[in-house]
Length: 137
Image (cartoon, rainbow, N blue to C red; front, side, top):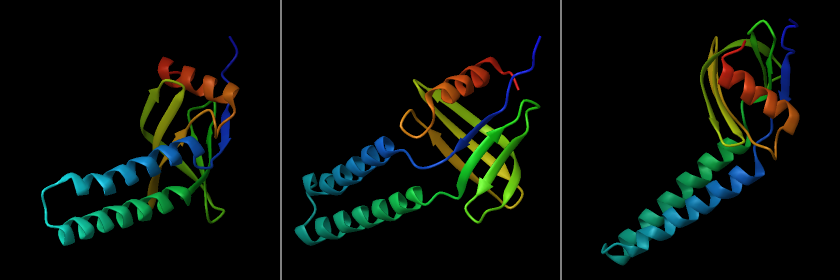
């Protein structure tokens, strides 16, 4: 039996996930106006919600992780924004439909990766889903 080949991704944030998150932030900021609070409080809460959402969206669009590789010997390597490569540990993974969400930790940090069909090659994403669901590593 042959061993499984390694899988590598250059990571960039998903456009679809960014749009969904932006819509959620807008709806959350507008939902404050459906409360019975006085107008000034509603304006302040809506502005705080919008600013917090905008801050987190900007963090999402500037990920710490620039690339992820899973070798056939079950070693995860992350390429960081500063150009470093670190060996990582997969703390958690979730396969949701065609999407794969990974939480990786390494010495001195950690990060999450959302791989969807719009930011990862479909064949590699399919192979990653199969390996994660089968427990092969």
